[in-house]
Structure formats: C-alpha cells, structure tokens
Amino acid sequence: MHIDKTYSLQDIADMLKRPRTTLNNWYQTFKIYLPVVGSGRTKRFKEEAIDIFRLIMELKDRNEPNEIIEQYLTNSVKEITIEEEDSSSNNVVTSIVKGYENILTEVSNQRDFMIQMYQESQAKNEELTNLIQTMSKEHAAALEKIQTTIETDRQKKGEDIEKLQEIMQKDKTEREQERKKIEDRDKQLLEGLRKLREDKEDRESIPWYKKMFK
Image (cartoon, rainbow, N blue to C red; front, side, top):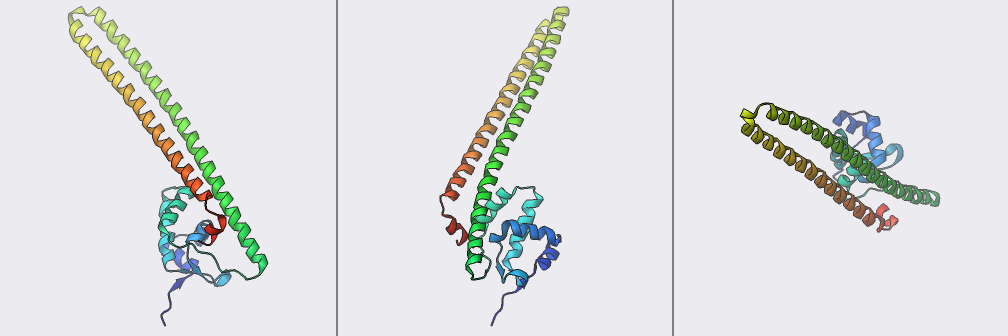
C-alpha cells in the first residue's frame, strides 16, 4: 500500500532555509490553505504544502500584505484544509466561533487596507502637486531670465524668442504629462478599490459555514 510522504514543520523550514518560528507564523495566518494530516503534536504536512509555503515565502520577500497573499492562495489552492478536531460539542462550537472571528478579521483587514491605499494616494497626489508647483516656479524664473536677456541683446532677439517658445511649449507638455499621470493613477486606484469592494461583497455573500467547510 502506497503511503504519501509527510513532513514536519521543521523539515519544511530546513528546506526553505527559514526559521521554524517564521513558518509557524505563516501557518497560523494561512492554515486553511496548508494541507495537514493529524492534529496537535502529531500534525504533519502533506507534500503539496511545501510549494504553498514557498509561494508564501516569495510573496513575503516582496513585502506583499497578507490580504494580497490570501488572494494568491485563494486562486492557487483548490482545497481548503480543516484541521481534525475532537468530536465533542465544545470543540465544534469553538471551531465555529473561530471561523466567524476569522471572517470578521478578514473584513476588517480589507477595510484597513482600502483606507491605507486611499491615504497613500492622497499623500502621493499632494507630493506631485507640490512638485508641479515647484517646477512651475523654476520655469517661470527661467522664462523671466530669458526675457531680460532678449531685452538687453536685440541682435539675437529672433533666436532668443524661438528658444523661449520652445521652452514654453516644453513646460506646457510637461505639465500635461504630469496631469495625465495623476489622472491615470487615480483611475487605476479607483478601479483597484472597486475590485476590492466587489471581492469583499462576493465574500460576504457566501455563508460563513460554506467558507469553513468548502
């Protein structure tokens, strides 16, 4: 009879060359996506859990937030793992309560993530606005200097006027480009917020018990 090979958390930590405590934190956060056999001290991980831990590690190395990592796992992992529990009613109730708490935590995290994205966007907009204003002042000073030069050297008036027009056109083009960047980024942000909101509404429309025993 064929027996699938299983691994301890320390085995996988050695493979990935990460501390066992780090992998344990990842497991506690994303346990429903990590297939295990047994429970408690006898708990061991199935072989496919290695690739899932590796995916989590790569996303963590890229400083991705837990919400984004969970989206990757939702799209990648086909089966949700429910740890084996005692058959007593107390353990069943505890499991249900924990599942409900996890759902509330997820919703709260998504809300905080959306607020953070909005605040970061506002800060970037302000930064870009200040940059544009600074550039405008610098260009205005440059134009004033050129105009003074034109007045003091009329023999080069035609050439200097042409250069002035080129600089003004360049300034106009740069302002249009900066404005376009701000508009495009705002559109992308609004689209991202809309998708996150739709994902949240889709998740909330699924009964909590289906999420736990999916």
